[in-house]
Image (cartoon, rainbow, N blue to C red):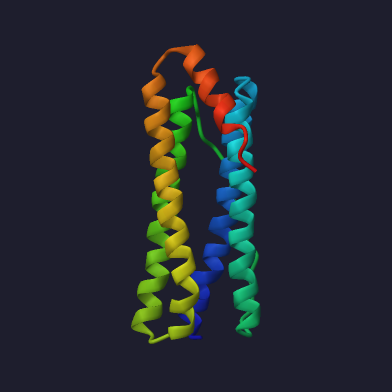
Amino acid sequence: MKQNVADLLNAQVNKEFYSAYLYLGISKFFTKAKLYGFANWYRVQATEEQEHAMKIYDYLLDSKQDVCLEAIDKVDIKIESALAAVIEADKHEQYITAEICKIMDLAVAENDYTTQSFLDWFIEEQKEEEENSRKMISRVEAVGSDRRLLYMLDKEIEKRE
């Protein structure tokens, strides 16, 4: 693995851990709003992001590369509604997809077939993540300002493990 590919993968470890922080911040918003199903959804999402970070971490170490653990940025978002929260999550998923694609582009340019194969999983995962976030936006938009419908949706999504 060339150093420039390893550098991008190292940076992605940090971005995945930041994603976990972001989703914990969104979960906190929903907990304070007493929407515990949404809070659980994003807490589970935070755990998933940590798993993504560790998958890259392990890949780097298995590839005899160093892993440089950087400071994780503070989550500084202002969320004022359920819709704003799910839109923020969707924007972040789009950002992560773009970052994974940048790594794939470099792996292709460097003829790094092993990393390309490794990244295939992340590309499929991001496709699923973006689909889920778009569905969440649609569902929250559909309930509009009807608090009862929002609570019904909250109850429905709290089952995520």
